[in-house]
Structures are given as C-alpha cells and as structure tokens.
Image (cartoon, rainbow, N blue to C red; front, side, top):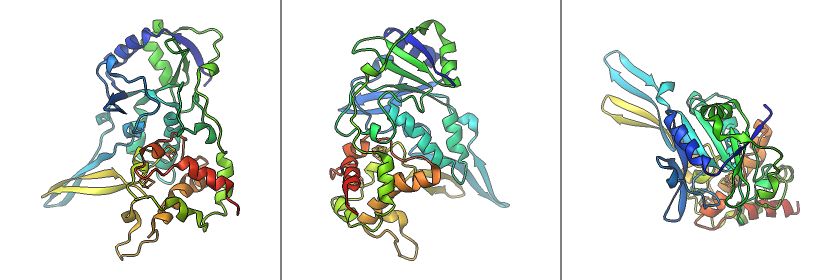
Length: 341
Ligand code: SF4
Ligand code: SF4
C-alpha cells in the first residue's frame, strides 16, 4: 500500500492518545524510571518518555512475552484434559513510540515464528498489535541500523511512522497499512494535509560501518576461525544480550504443576547459556562460550538470511549497551569484516 502523508500538530498527540485509550485498547509506550526506559502499559499521556535514545528492553514482549501460558491441563479419571488460550483472551494493543529498528525487528521475529511451523499464539498476539513508530532524531555510538538495512526514518514494520519536524515541532505522519488507516478513522480531524515535507533533514545521522551482505559472505568461511575465542573470552554467558534483543526468539517450555492441575508456560531462553544445548546424556555440542558466541552471530548473519531471507539483527545496539562484560557486537562485526581469511 502506498503511504499517505499527514501533518499532526504537536498538541494533537495527547488527543490521539486519549482517543486510542477510549477505543478499548491497551496503550504500551516508553516509560522512564531510574535512568532506564522500558515499554509498559500507560494510563497518562504525561508518563510517556520522550528524551531517550533507545529503550533498555525491546518491544518484543508485546507479541512474545517473557513468560507466557500456552495451555492449562488437568488430570482426571479418564486421562487428561487440555484447554488452550482463546484468541479473544488476547488484548488489542497500541504500541506507541517504537523506534524504526524495533519495528523492523517485528518482521525478523515473525519470520522465525512462521518458518517450519506457524506459531498461532504468537501470530494471534501480533495481529492485535498496531505499531506507531517514531523516527530517531538522536543516536549514540552503539547504533548501527544503517549497516543492517535500516535507517532512522525506516517505515518497515510500522503501521504509522511519526517524524518530528524539528526539536519542538509538529509531526509528519506516514500512514502505511490498513491498521494505520483505522487509527486515522478514529479521529481524522487530528491528521491535516501534509504538503511537501522532506523528513530526511530531521533524522539522526547513523554512519554505515559495514554491509550485512559483506558479513554474510565472510561468515561462510569463518566457522573455524580462532577469532571467536578472542571475541568471547570476556563473555560470562549471562544471556542479557538475548533478553534485550528485538529479534532473539529462543524459548523453552516448562510445566507449572499443582497436583492434578497445571499450566504449560513458554519462557525466554538464550543460546548464550551453557545449559541451552546440554543433552540428557551430559554431552554438550556447544561446550565452550566461544561456540555459543559463534552461534549467536552465525544465526543472525548467516543461518537466518540463508533459511529465511532476512537478517536477525536490526542494529539497535541494545546487546552492547546491556552487556556487563562490555562485549560490543558492532566492534566484533567490524573485526569479522576486516579479518584476513
Ligand atoms: S550480555 Fe555480554 S556477557 Fe552476557 S551473554 Fe551476552 S555477550 Fe556474554
Ligand atoms: S543483536 Fe544486538 S544490535 Fe542486533 S538487534 Fe539484537 S540487540 Fe540489537
């Protein structure tokens, strides 16, 4: 669908927020506390954070919660009865203020959940999410979206993308999907004709450090490189990088049993954990941290493009900001690009 462009006055955003809340939706938006900004359910417009570069956690929790009940079961005289999650138990969510790198990550995450098996619970959740993206006017040394196919004003993954036209200015709204059009229909008077507005000059400048295609080509011959050991020596395998990442999709399944009743729960996991690949025999095919770090990079930059035709990294920089051991994915990808083979 061709995007429709409108002008939204700065003062109209609060009115739009109230209209959306009144439309029987939960609004999730960035909220700052103690120097950390995360998405959470917001009741008051004034609680929405605006002065931040990137949230600590990505917005993936909205469609892929960190713990999620997938069914209830009970044992009885005839055996077992099982009750799944009904789609109408999943709320309609408006995801407000998501950065273009996180919006791009929605497609990458979805490709994993729809590869060899279509994950209905994930797809049901995502079908109820409307994405209101906000372009980036600020960046830091960890951002590298332009090296992995994105940019600070990328429309991919958003239903509407807002770009602020100067520090305290109005917003250009690009309406990109039918979900976006439904938002406009709720309050069309807030969306004025836009005319000819160039958004580029209002966007952050994120230098290109490498091309993801270059990394892909290099990784084909890099599997047995000693570089992985050097890169991962200080990694403590805490999994923080996977938990904050908008495209990491590993999970495990646990049963929460209480006598004859129980629930089956899906919980985030990480390929950085030593237990992740431990077999019941005691054998672990990735028995050292360098093998686990290699898996993280290979999966995102080699296996995903090969199998799913997408990369598994949006250049949001969260893994580097969150790492307690100061591992920096941008530095490591640059050193792979420059390594002699
Ligand atoms: S956050 Fe850092 S230390 Fe923790 S697993 Fe990831 S790379 Fe290793
Ligand atoms: S690997 Fe790191 S930089 Fe890439 S999307 Fe995940 S958290 Fe962001």
